[in-house]
Length: 468
Image (cartoon, rainbow, N blue to C red; front, side, top):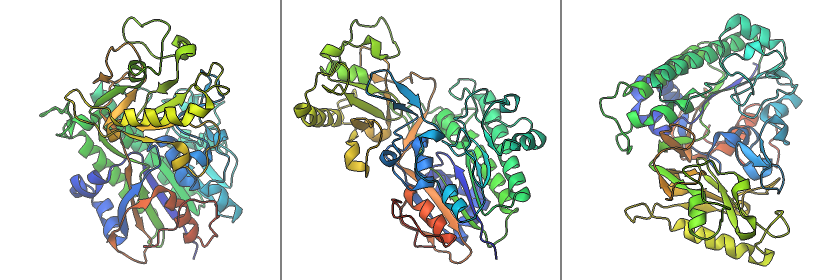
């Protein structure tokens, strides 16, 4: 009998919601949990969509991929940042390896697949596709499907297909709520079409709606959120969306037989956001960063604002912080001598881990050196990776706050940060074990290869999940 493996990815889906808070609203998901195994899935460092999904699909860490976030340094100049895409992925993906074994794959919405590369199967790229995300079908030059004729099938089946919601950081939440449901239903409609019409062995899809949901609506659900709004009209939005995800899952499961191995996975989890630490304000305050002039009001940080002759380090904002050392002989105007590099990093690490909130309580910041958490560091890694407040605080890159604390996001409304633990559910029809110990995101690709009886490359970081 032909083996098939179906993976449905829910970006940012939180185990505490699926396994507990919304369990009664998700009967199809709960049946899968009872029929197989489930548990927490530890994400990458950092736990962020790019590169986490591609780390899952290659079982290689961010350092091995040389992809440390959405934007990466192109060279050691100060302003050369490039947005990661499929060309940055230089190691075999799961569908590449399966193709070598004459297996055909469907890949729908997986981040870092644009531009679509030829492979044995069918691909629709992800939210990182450039252009009008609401109307990709109007832009014939986009390399967002493979084969290219798949675009015509999308136009016939879901003519209003949305790759993403262009402005999900908005105060127009009622409109956003409807867009989220529309986008999700359309993606799953086309997924069912592909399930039924294509001769696939491996099917992998990622729905981004769950991530957009959390960032926009977390405060209306989480009573511990500092901006929690009781009796909000959006109090049921998250629960309703997860109910919709479960309904779509049920329709997907109706399209496959009981012998199909089914996995539900998320790339990371979610947690409330207590505030932001202004990383460049902090670096200025502690004598690491000097600006040419003080900004008049809150201003987006750019490297041309910096007095490099007086600067040891600068930072990037985001859900986590990346800090770069202005190293002599590496950066154009580097001032930190190579023999002082480790001392400066250690000093920064110690001081960052000592950050307190406005009441004087330590916020439990964690700081990582890339070479200590990755097996190798390709391309240009940050010198330090920082989880402010253990990810309850985001990193804010802008300057001009005159404080290291802010409670408004500099890139638009945002209610949550990412958490290190995503989730997995696996049903293979052979065993049901229920809740099992935490597994690693790197374990998913080896598990799929094992299901197909294909040798696991020694370079893969993970191991097959033994519980199935």
